[in-house]
Image (spheres, rainbow, N blue to C red):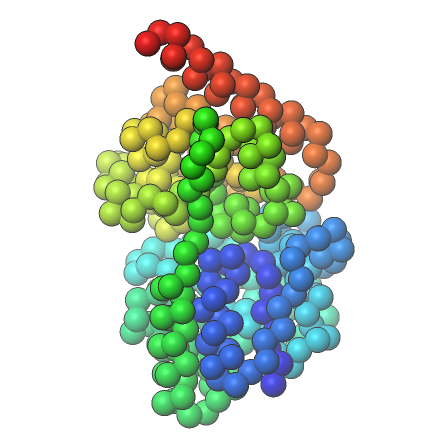
Length: 303
């Protein structure tokens, strides 16, 4: 059986788990290609106009896969921590692709409400049951997939550059080079190293979240806030670059909260949409780079 795995949304974070789980069950995994202009065009044609860029791109990956597999792994991702949730667009993602893309193969769309072991093994039995009816084999495949995921190192923290910028935002914006126009390469060429927010310990993130007057309703938004504030307070980077999808309601709130907390620490939001012109994007990155370099020189002059 061929199972399609769309290279979009949470693929960047959980692809090792998903691929290992499916292969351990005996399936052949078909992964869509890295995001490109054709994938984007497919998604724009299929998806509703109001959706954000990552949702449109996910539609493009699904559309590319639909005639190349027997079923698609598209979990209904509701939450990854107990009593917390993620973007509401994810909750309706199955309905979106089902109504927007014709002639889809069966969808393996069992809901994920938490990554806590007991709830995730329940998901594994529902999802794995589409391929394998033996619960023992499903449990074994699940345990091997969890171990493989735990071994996966996500993110980077580059050394050897005079300046460093922290990239913050949804993983599909940070690690999809087409979506972010290869921002890491652009920064490196300007003499700036890059770290990702995943380098901050979860305990340190949670400690910063606790200072808010109310706990964030959305898990990932809380992570971005906690990591950004911790990075600024500890001076782990010289500036923060927040990659945000145009029309993302959660980001619009979270970036304001971050800016109000970190004060004059260098912080810039880059909006991402389906318009692929790089001139304005490059100009803003270069301006942010120049500002950081002048700030660094001024600091050395004062000392």
